[in-house]
Structures are given as structure tokens and as C-alpha cells.
Length: 167
Ligand SMILES: Cc1cc2nc3c(=O)[nH]c(=O)nc-3n(C[C@H](O)[C@H](O)[C@H](O)COP(=O)(O)O)c2cc1C
Image (tube, rainbow, N blue to C red; front, side, top):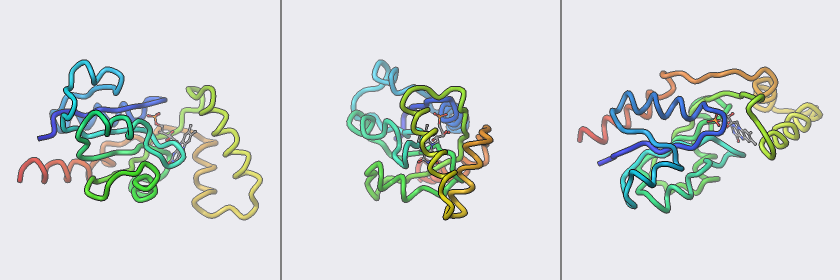
């Protein structure tokens, strides 16, 4: 039985989703740094991390401590659009569902390597005359920023959880 939600968040969007999901499921929510104080090794959890170059931040570490039953990756792209790319990059086994959720871009809260990488990506996409439609959309989202967190994006995760816990 799933006992908790564990998350990692850089600029806050994943944290909001984790707390929303916690309210909906009744599960306690822990930041990955604090989870060890409260959860035993091997506890069944839902893991939520932000997307970094398609990878799900913190998943590999969480998978070493807990039995991860579901993974959510929060990124700038559309909800559901990066499920398979994130699974591949984070090496999530096929038996574990992966849901990608649209978070947002809060450029002011980026620092260090993360800020540098977004600046580089912005330059690269701006200078690429052969950008795909998706890349152009991503560039606009990076430039305009914004918070796209919405309870509706959690509907598939919730449906999965309810089916699993009620059968
Ligand atoms: C260095 C870097 C790489 C990123 N890579 C991706 C990506 O591959 N796919 C995506 O959809 N979003 C990507 N993003 C956007 C973040 O995942 C997005 O801003 C997310 O909402 C951050 O979650 P947080 O606020 O919980 O930290 C990236 C952001 C940064 C800073």
C-alpha cells in the first residue's frame, strides 16, 4: 500500500503538485531531504520530481531508498507529452507508470547551472532557423514564463491511484 508522496522541487511547481496530490489522496507529503526522517527504507511511495533535460530529478536516489510505485515529472511541456522521453531518460522500469505534468517557468528563481543551461537553450533555440513547432512553443514558454500548475493535470495520476488502491 502506498504510504507517502516524496518530491524534489527547484522553483516550487512540483511542490505545489505534491501538496495537491497529497490533499486529494490523503497521503502525507515529504520533501526528499526530509523523507528519510519519517519513512523507512522500502516504503511504497509516489515520487514527484522536476524535469531536467528530460530526466526526473531525484528519481534515481528515491528508487534506492523506497519502493517507487508511480513517478511524476513536472516540466514546462504539455501534460502527458514527455511520459516516454522521461521514462527513458530516468530509466524508470516499464512496470512503473510515469506521468509528466505541466509546471511552469520561474526564471527569477533559477540560479547557477540551471540558469546557465536555460540561457544556453534559449540562445540555441532562438538561433535555430529550422526549429520544430514544439521547439518554438518551448522557446515562447521559456521567454514568457508563467505558472501552469492545474489540478486538472493530476486527473490521470488520481485515476491510476484510485484504481490501484481500491482493487
Ligand atoms: C536546466 C533545466 C532543464 C529543463 N529541462 C526540461 C525538460 O527537459 N523538459 C521540460 O518540460 N521542462 C524542462 N525544464 C523546465 C522545468 O522542468 C520546469 O520549470 C518545472 O516546472 C520546474 O519544476 P519546479 O518548479 O518544481 O522546480 C528545465 C528547466 C531547467 C532549469
